[in-house]
Each structure stands twice: as C-alpha cells, then as structure tokens.
Length: 221
View 1: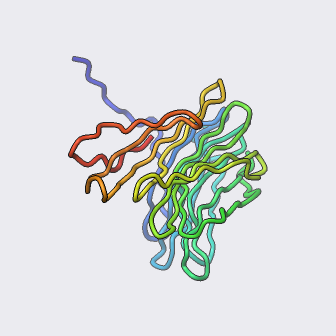
View 2: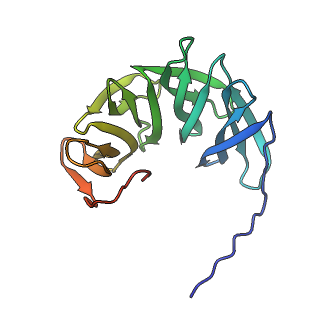
C-alpha cells in the first residue's frame, strides 16, 4: 500500500480583519492565485493573492463594496485572471458577478449578470479564451444558469435549466472539439424528496447520476 505524506514547502497564512474563508486556487504560467473571503464583523469582501511557485508574493487585491461580496471560482487566460461569485446591492439582493483582473493584479472589469438572487459557482476558459460560467438564480424556485462570454465579458449565449423543481448549476467544462458539458444538482418534489445530480451535454444529452434513494447534494466539479 502506497502512503503519501503531505509536506508544505511554503505555507502562506493570510491574516486580515476577523475571519478569512478560502474558496479557490488556480495555477497560471507565472504563479499561483488564491481567492477567498474576508469578514470584518460587518460584511464580506473578496481577497485575491498571487504568488510565485516558490512562494514569493506577487500581488494582492481586495474587492470590497458597501455590501457583501463573495468569490467561488478562478481561472485565467494568458495570465489575465477571471473570477466568479456574487455581489449584493443596496437592497441586499445578490447578483452573480464576473471579475477580470490584469496580470499585475489590477481590477480591469466587473460584470454583474442580469438575474436577481443569482450566484456564479464555477468558471472555465477554453484554449481560445472563451469564458464559460455555471451558477443559479431564484425565480420562484432555483434555476440553473450556464453561459458563455468573450474575454471582454460580453455575453455570447445563456442556457437556463429549470427541468427540476430546484436546479443548481455547479460546474461547466469544454472539450477541444467545442463540446460543452454542464453539471447541476436537482431536486423535484413531485418525484422524490432527495437531491440528484445531472450531467448534460449542450445540444446533446442529459444523464441522471446515481438515481437512488440517497441524497447526492454537494457534488462539485
């Protein structure tokens, strides 16, 4: 039996305000980007840091508004960083958000999607720089949302999945032939009180994974 021992070569601890919550890590050609959330007893903000692969800090960026902001996923294209999460507005309504960040850690653009009570959970960028996101929003029930954007954060297309009573878009990936695959959590009270997860191909097929009597909530990419 093979036993592996994890040895940290350069553990980095970010200590800021009261509480920190880690959410995502992404490796680029020039370093490692980490993203999480900071709580200061009033609101959540986003903190992103980039390190060399030997552990030297390259930059840190705090994204802070007057209301809660949360990060879920990070990706990159040619060392430009893209991240997804949500931002609250003055009515305390959450909106799914995409951030574009320069290679030196400057916030270049912010895209807030036009779906109230929305949350973007995953981001994937293909070899051409096309950006794909997965999430969900509230419209009397939760509906999954899967979208494609260009590098300037202009929307190309959006698919909404409301096939179950509640639908949570959790992950999205592409293949080199252009195929797009979605993963969601679904719950349908008319069928069963349990959660299921579903894998779909855009303009193709959907398969319900492990259709048993046990809950499958929480499956991620």
